[in-house]
Image 1 (tube, each protein chain N blue to C red):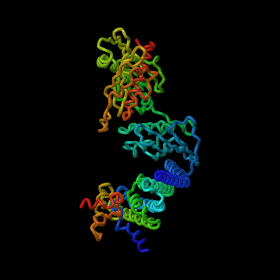
Image 2 (tube, chains in turn purple, green):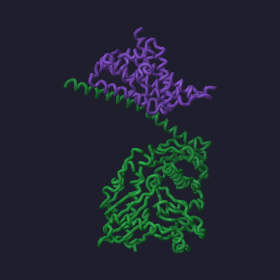
Image 3 (cartoon, chains in turn yellow, red):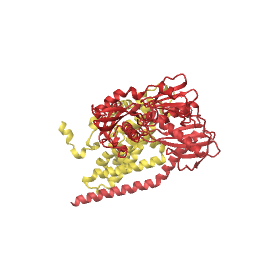
Image 4 (tube, rainbow over the protein chains, first blue to last red):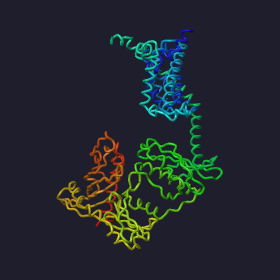
Amino acid sequence: MKNNMRVLLNGFVKENPVFVLVLGTCPTLATTTSVISALAMGLAAAAVLVCSNAAISLLRKIIPDKVRIPAYIVIIAGFVTIVQMLMEAYLPSLYEMLGVYLALIVVNCIVLGRAEMFASKNTVGSSILDGAGMGLGFTLALLCMASVREVFGAGSFAGIEIPFISNYTVPILVSPPGGFFVFGVLIALVSALGKKPAKEEFGCEGCPNAALCKGECGKEEA
Amino acid sequence: MKSGIKSVIVLTSICLITTLLVALTNHFTAPVIQKNKADAANQSLVQVLEGAKNFDKLEKPADAPGSVQDIYMETSGLGYAVTVSVTTSYSKSPMLYTVGVSGEGVITGIVITNYGETKDFGKDTYPETYLGMDSALNGAELVAGVTYSSTAFKQGIEDVFAVLIKMDLIKAGEKSEAQKIKELLDKLIPGALNDSGAGSFKDHTVPDWAQSGYEAANGTGYILVSKDGTVYTVNPFGKVKAYDTDGKDITDKAQNLTDAAGAVPNLSGEKQEADTKALKKLAGDASAFTIAVIDTVSTVTNAFVIDAEGETLYGFVCRPIGYNNGVMTVYGILDSEGKIKEIKISEIILYSQYYDDYELDEDAYTEGLKGKDGSTLSDEDTLISGATVSGNAVNKALKDMFEAYGRITEGENGN
């Protein structure tokens, strides 16, 4: 039970995919101009993460090693397409808002990274918890970043205008350079608040290439 | 081998199961998505007719213009809403909009539902200029900078009125004299039209008996409008014709034919020396040139019968409108059978002026054209990827050359 909780909470802070593992930067920068779109992107990615982790974990003993990556991609693409269709049907305004970034979840490093590093080696239950933890961690990170950008860049929160602040906005925050700036500041903040320096947090656990290098990359550099 | 087969089977199975799941989801979501789209389209109907609540879809006439998608009638009799789809050479996706027309035949609203043009300059303002206009579209202007898009947009509006008038739903608006004359310019001097069908004209000095004068930007003719409303066209060879404001040929009855010819420069004569020099480079220095006077053939600005050491050739100079309304010059020599013997294209409007990485291949414009005649030239012969407008202009010029050749050899106009 304790171990399950640790798996679930890992993605929130300790191995936060955005601020610690620095994965999924493209949708992070693109969809955090508003809280609503960030939340929608985060939850869509979380749904795909949970489903793909579950499916891949379920099939981990069947999928031969040499075709595992194409198999993972097909599974992930399938779930992304399903999420896309459901959003277009039942949340059309959010679907319009996310545009091409919704389809790009297929190539999101977080999804493939968790499939390769966790789901392919653990039980279905643990994989679902890992997917949920990582997905919610991703959502939380997007939400934090979008809150800063929308509140100070557009003077509103989730589309609701905030009195006073709306008169003193910094419009660059909702533009791409502002996105990079806020991203950098938040990474620095999370790194500073962590007990250990951020670099040490980059263990093989979160690295999608870990299976290939088998932990040798760090030793070579040293 | 065994593991290879297993890999194939597993991957194929995963693909099939995934496809099945996606298909299943599509089965349930497709009708909902379809309904959402229909609702969005209906929303635009309500927006273009103030106070509208319900619409009935009308059956579109079989010969309705292709741009007209659907026609709706407001059930309480407020008017009509028509959905339009137009594309231009610069469309990334079709330009979709809904036009509201009152029962009196006046535009009440326009909502653009998709603007897929590469340049969106003015898209928020120029559609609004049509509000309150009737089918005469008096005062509707094209927009410099987005000429192709605004021309297509205007054409779509004209199509809306055309179909509503055809269905006897509204009455046609009255066009002013000035408007009729403006439309006549495009009709009477087709050589001045660009790839999207918009004419390039500039004002010309007028004699005492005329009220207005126009000159085609590419030298394919002049138009003078007399104070009594007669429209005189003077082609590059100095030939004059007269029309009434409805475009009916009244040359036999017109008074100022000689005055009209004398009031404008003889374009063919003025450029004769330069054109002859350019054509001699293609036909050979020893050739003797005789100017051929022909009726207006679109872009043809000069025509010659050439005696090239006993062989009879035909030389033509065409000036079509190319990319960005720039004037191109196409020199062609046809042999006695009307086949292209030599061809040269100059003053090509360089795409590199607009796109830094575009490299112009001048030979691509003339490659494979020699030996072609009116029956063997196709649109694909002059199609150049990345330079479609210029390629189309060359095609138009060549077709005009073949037509002018026909007129000279059949003795209709040549002398």
